[in-house]
Image (cartoon, rainbow, N blue to C red):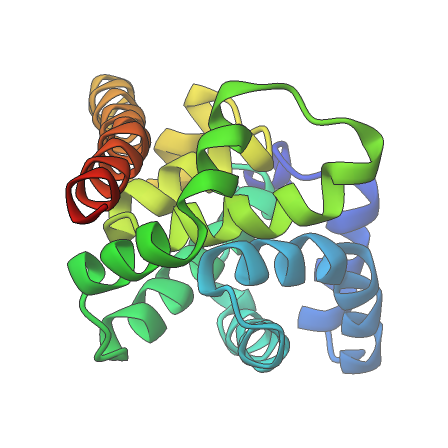
Length: 205
């Protein structure tokens, strides 16, 4: 019983029932966590259809591995670990090059992104800015995107990040610092790109 001390009473009961043969009870796990898992997939993958498919695949994986859960961390952390690894596998299969993607974003929506990074959003701008945030995150390396999404969007603590990403607290802090630096470096590119465009336009005139 002590092995399950990190699990909530509700999760504890459901897991035991599923492992004991009442497989239909797993639907409670899906209902409880599907919103968070789907949201995480969408933020990382930036594709609603792919995020929906990924969420379903993740719950299948979690079900197949449920007997491997040892409650050394919260069940949600264990599920996030499966989610992160699955999404990273999908991202690695994509052929799009990150640099090309970033250049394309600069060309198409540089002004919007600069505004997003430099000012707090009004209510009427939230949906548009949410979409822009996803595009900005999509331009980051996989590991940087993952830790930023888990920390800044889903609110995981440093300890939860360490358990989810299976690394030390020092490694979490270093990776998060590097990810924020990469995001800021990209953000700093917007003013330079816009200035370059204005200079070229003035020269042509």
